[in-house]
Image 1: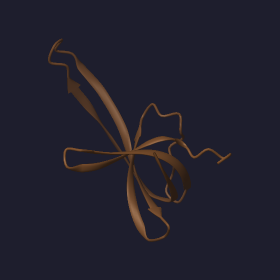
Image 2: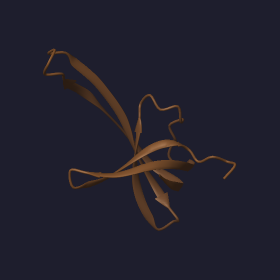
Image 3: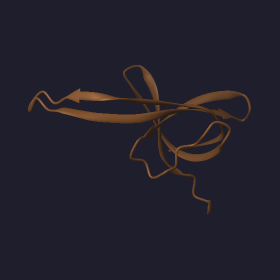
Length: 88
């Protein structure tokens, strides 16, 4: 887990459906990609799932998040976990 804090530059909503091959059922999915300017020098894209309890930021909002970082499929994935705990 890592901390990401900075100004939100943009939020892009993505959604669609995925076929469950076993049942033939289409299952909906949705998430936001939040572009965060960190330390006024670089941008990180954070995935925020639609059912996240953390409020979606707007452009210009400051965020302070705990994120989970993993590498899958040759890409670095940064996913929102929660707000950064204020007691740390």
